Length: 258
Image 1 (cartoon, rainbow, N blue to C red):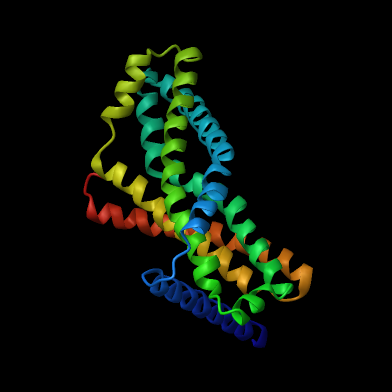
Image 2 (cartoon, rainbow, N blue to C red):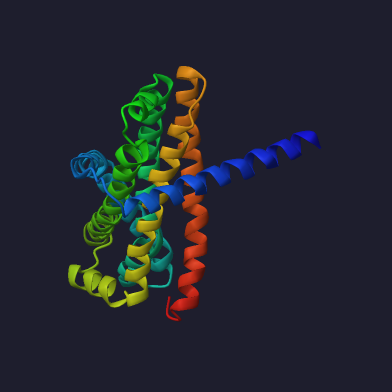
């Protein structure tokens, strides 16, 4: 019982500290000073740096999805509908979720490792001693960059995923290009596009804040940096999947056609 109670206490404490950091970050977001150069630098690192892995993920996701669904649709003589399946699945769910899971593995871990190394080498304390606010200088630029980069990368991943589905449909399934693209676009509704664009904003916030939280709370030297990196990836991935469920339920309630 003591182990269970201690575990619950640790989880509650970490949730409290995470929401405290998120609240302070959002509060200071609207007051100067602002480090615009750092935001642009983080956009380059997070956005451009993650472009290759996101595009590859989107491409192969669309190709595999088209290949798998076609096997079932061909049983019913409905392989021309493969575009509808690929489009709806990628735009609604797979694009935002898989894109941000890739960001979780690459960006959240990187943030945790970078900030954790600064903590164990006392660079954070040196910043405070010189009058700089670590949250304004380190956390806010990364949060803004993730919130901007995640939707942009998701849009690219969605397009490349549809392109991958088109390649499989055209060259392997012998579905007309016009039929594929028409069916892909006809099935999309406002709720699909809205959910596909709103989710990455929320996921991007999670990726940045989880990485910053574990990075700034690193203890135990270099081993602590490794633990913070691992914990940030695991936690952000779980939170993305859990939040995706609740956001999907919310969109079901808001948009009857979702």
